[in-house]
Image 1 (cartoon, rainbow, N blue to C red):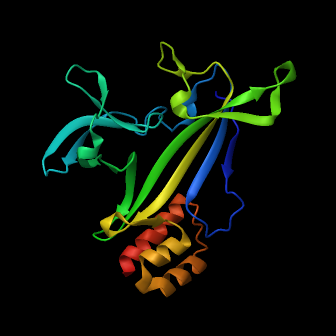
Image 2: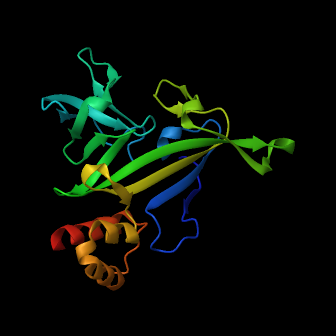
Image 3: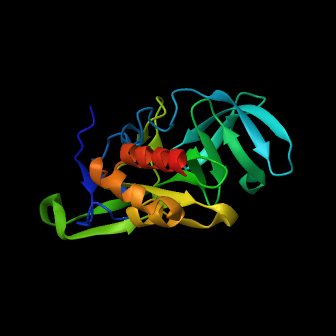
Length: 232
């Protein structure tokens, strides 16, 4: 069992602040990074499943795919059974899994909900920090030295685990946005919803107050978005 400490960082902002959720997890040397990434380790879904890929030229194709949380990449199973990444994601309009839809915009984003005018989307990011060591090998009080996850080089053992040889801190950021027409986007915050749905501003205020909506809660964001879609 991975020995970890999970901290949700709210940055001491009020409940109506922007919808970015940051979680920090300490991983000890010799432990498996993949255990903290998602319920299914390296991948968002338990298996590679057949998806429909819509291209921007209007054509479609199908392939067995999964979302690699560590790499922030959609991967697919090739003809020879090997695991591959999409080399030109900018040509993709959307990728439809059974339970989720993704599109590419400077990285893969998941569509949480949508109608013809607005989408609620989730952008995942993972970075790592090496823990500085001081006297007697204890963590230095001066802090940590920062490296992006692309600079972390874990070893893969026979079980396909991601093993690191130094203590690190994994930083998982989940950012929620409202994407409007012409790709204009605002944070999925209280003010962002008021901006995206100006006709029902007063209704959103009443709904938020009545239901004690926390704009840093993914579940509450879905509730507000559904309310706005149903009432606009």
